[in-house]
Image (cartoon, rainbow, N blue to C red; front, side, top):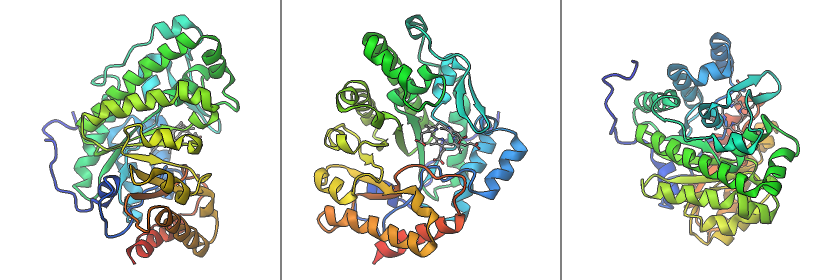
Length: 361
Ligand code: CP3
């Protein structure tokens, strides 16, 4: 086995400003990483994918997953690496059969179609069906050799349930919302078993070497306030509480979570990731220094010229500072959502450079 004889690493970090910012400690400049920093916008990613054949083939091969994780770090002085994988590996390991159709995104061969399907779900064994993820984490830690911390991740229970019930992406998430409305007990049973799986999955990633953990609640913002408080928030809180015992920092990212920030600030997470529909000034004011904030430049700003990208980066940095009592502490710079395949790597270079240079002043 590729990892036989590999000991757990205790190499000291050469760059710990991301972990320091998550603890709201002073930093020499604001740390930056980008959601989907590995992906099709990089020619070297497209070349690796062509040779590997498929996205899932890449994610399930620890050596390829490691290579692709490191690709953006070779180009840009990013302050964290994020495991190359997908949130849908967990339902895949629960037996739903994940596959990708070119241009259509993720699909499941066996989506949940009945309450009986939900009753049959169980937490997958991390040592067998998800072993490839833990192997990738360990290998990436070894290859990083302390350069920057490694982020592990998972989908949120609500977001995973969305795909498990719909069988793929959806415009309105009608099936999963109907289930929540018509069969709330079954919905809670589903969210509960997925929460147990997420906690086991993130704990195993931490044990394998992940130094911070992010939960992606990509579709929580599609819920109205009452349904968000019933079907997403309590499960995020359960995850944060369970991981607290491990002492690993946890970031809760939610697309469209601005209406729920006050609840999220007391969820037990170390950091909250926000999109660009809220100013960081407003979010930081409401936070009042309780947790770290991650975000939140509109990813589409990367379509602007490098000079425009730099100006946008400065505006995001200053917005945080203005809401945080004049201090940049407790800010991890990121986009408000993931990068797209048609973005220009040169603009990413300008962004990362500007975040570091401007915040160091
Ligand atoms: O941030 C990173 O660089 C880490 C890698 C990562 C991927 N997916 C790689 C990926 C992460 C963190 C994810 C999470 C993920 N996957 C989410 C939550 C984050 C978000 O964007 O809100 C969701 C909703 C998914 C499900 C998923 N997987 C979708 C919607 C897609 C896109 C399908 C498409 O054709 O664009 C994927 C595939 C996927 N995951 C790609 C990558 C790089 C594209 C793969 C390819 O075609 O090469």
